Length: 450
Image 1 (tube, helix red, strand yellow):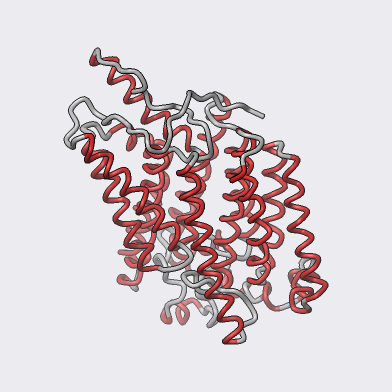
Image 2 (cartoon, rainbow, N blue to C red):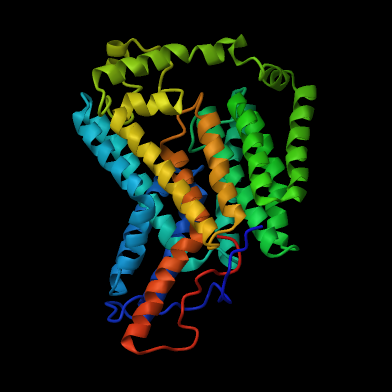
């Protein structure tokens, strides 16, 4: 395993010195702001699959508080400079989304879609600030991951209740709407949980919380099976296998075997799931996959009509768009990552999205080369790429909570680099001022999972 070098970390409650030579806020106020950031992050994570309103409120408040915090340190440039360097394509995509929204014939709907993309940018910065300041280790890891899992359990509980009461044939979580959005969220969550488990065990072989996280994966797999989304029944095991190989976490193959065993049991006892799994090798044998062809053709017509900016964010479902481009009634989105971006955002949106993936991979490989990142971080990046390219064949993989989960994945895979950027900036300023104090240095590579 590629080792990540680290200094002796502090506990979650350790105070971090103000980030500037002349901070605008007092140390006690900055500490309270960091605590409030943690609370807002927990609320946001819990509500990703549970409540849209609370998710948006906590996300917006967390972003605003992050801006105020780094401004209040008196020298906010270290974090924002690194965030822009590692995520400038996300900024670019947001700008393209705004231009596409104004360009759309459904301007209000397009600007509403832009707000969703702006929320994605806010999430990227909010999550990055939280990782840089709170170090995803120890108690912090338990709280943040626990919020994600409890929110998923709550959202799934509502979905299962609807299955029983309304006699639905699939699982759709409370805040995620249909089964496909639920499957996208669950797939990304499972990859993140596997990363956290592997990373924790590679740092401490008997890490009980990491073992607990790995034991949760079969439960999440059951939820994924209940969505009946066949694409992710292929994408998730492939992502897991690649992550295990890259991280050399051979013991975790037991978890993958358990998930496949659950699938075998489901196929044996539940006829409808048996049919879903049996038709996996032949996706074109029923109308579920082939019905996407007219949607893809409509997306190409959109692109030909508006090649640079598309028809506008979140415009696939609009009645006049359906009439203009001869879309089927069920085409609420592109049913494919590439065609959805191409139709709604045009060539500029596709280019910005591709740049995001390229810059992300570049930073991960650079971190591996300098040993500032471990194999588990590369595994997380690779697992998400598998989900995007395999799951993206039949699903849009962008928008709402799915986009926020993608931002969280990127931030976690670069977590030590965030901490290093903020910490090295603080240390250099203290040296330049001629003032140092024991334990003032921000730990560049803290122990634990981020």
